[in-house]
Length: 586
Image 1 (cartoon, rainbow, N blue to C red):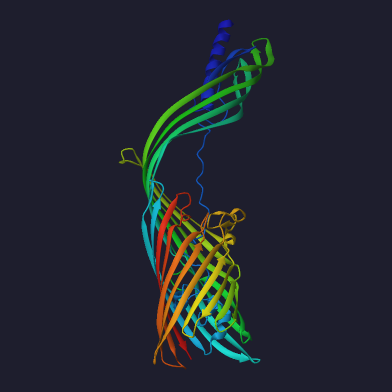
Image 2 (cartoon, rainbow, N blue to C red):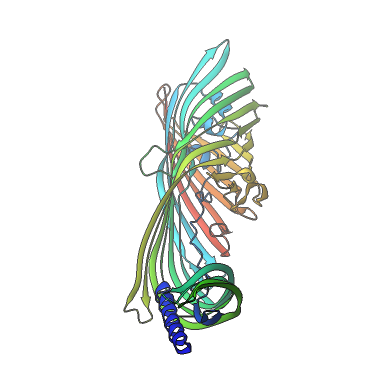
């Protein structure tokens, strides 16, 4: 009888072993336990509960946030025209030609005849960058454009014994043209990264044997505590070539009206309907392209530890010949068992690729008003002032990101991975443009010689940009609007004109100088403007034609530090602008 049961229980052990192997194909048996029952001893193979492998997972890549276009190349919200800019823009209290609606709409009251005008602008900018870092090398960049600067038609009339002038205007208000390139060599010293993860898992395992001698079922309730640790030492060397290009114009269609209050006092108002330029090639868009190549080395040490404990229950029936069935049951506790693993590896890779991000702004629209006054104090002195109210612009921004990357082994002969991804997201965005005001004076020494002076301020601290589902920021420094460090900017301009009168023409000689602050992240950038202008007249009234030219040189030293935040960039900027105006009297 004893040999019988030994043979019986030996068969049971083998059967349980094979059943366990079928239940866990391809898995190694972690631990064998022997359970004593009234029917004999049984060996149970137990595995740790839960998933296998490391619990540490890589982070998902994050899509860059929406960003506004650069404002650094945009002019202050002022006016246009060769005559005004030949005086360095000190035109608020003079404003006596067809461009008055953009400087001081009250100045339109000085127009005695209907007239129409057209102005063109040619610009060329050169930026010479320097960096405080040997790994971020930014050189010289030159760019420029040619734009229609101004169109207008003005019509004087009388109503109620007072003089009025109405005009329709098209004006260029913001130019976003900018370019930048740099070579970046990013060599990272070895850095260690450690992470740990823990998990608790439960499982139920059922084993048993059933034949003519015994029926037994063993149910095991297991709990596994697993901890994983990962230590990674990374080093990399990445060389990239960065190119940034931006273009675009915001312009305005502007009806304006000036009214005479007294013979010496006039007021005026203009309504500006802003839009992204309807002319082809002048839409607001930017492209950032980075071509990169580099090598990386990764040394990884991973360890896993698993500790499993549990209890079991069994019940069964022994079939004794000639006696009958005898039931039995019981329970017990497994001795906790554990195992651990440790692995080390090193991977050397070479990668090259192209990252390209394109932003495009469509359907930009906004509206604001310009108010002005003109006061002729005496034959020697006139004063003027204007205010551009703050305004909001709604637009649609489309961001497209394309990334192509190829990874090779250390020999650079075998391709390990080649991926191309492209995502396009469109969001509604809103700009908040700031308040601008100017005060000016004209000093008339005689009817051929006069000097002008303007002082103005732009509230760039209130400039804002907000993308759908994102926070409102000041795009100058990228901080939340309530936390921005951007300061309001001031400008002082002065001009001088002398008129040469001949029998058939008049030739003005103009010169001007201006000091202006432009917005930057911490402290405003300082620029100086130097202007020269001249022109000539053709014919006599009615039908007289005025042709004007202006050249403006703008210079700034150690500016544009906000263009690439955190890189300690500085640039010496030289900008050349040429303006031409043609005004026709009727």
